[in-house]
Structures are given as structure tokens and as C-alpha cells.
Length: 75
Image (cartoon, rainbow, N blue to C red):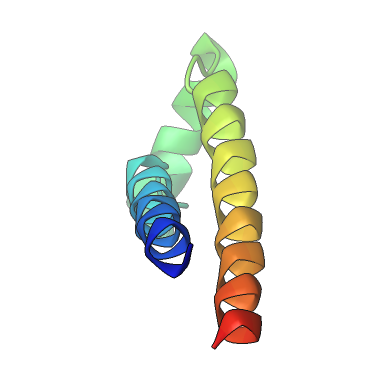
């Protein structure tokens, strides 16, 4: 039982890592303001992907927390 929960926890951790790394960063500085203006004019197509990745990372993080708690209770 503990082995199965540990495997699931590792998969959830990899899911969190992948979804966070795939999200686009928040640009800062002069280059960010230029890119932000271009996105406002031409429209940002990455918004739907970023929102999907954000929701997925929230789900993976929540599941990771639940499985961590379950493993600590079983110890």
C-alpha cells in the first residue's frame, strides 16, 4: 500500500514540476512591456494554454499534498 502511494506521489511531483516549467513566465522590464503591448494589439493565443497549465498545476499540487498526508499517517 505504501509503495503504491509512494509511486503515485512521485508521479504527482513530476506533474507539478512539468506543469510549472511549461507555464510562461511573467516578463518584467522593458522587453516585457514591449511584448505585453504586442499581445494586446495582436491578441494572446497562449492565455488558454496558460490557464489550463495553471489549473493542472493546482490539481497536481493538491493531490501531492493529499498523498503526502496519507503517507505520513501510514508511517
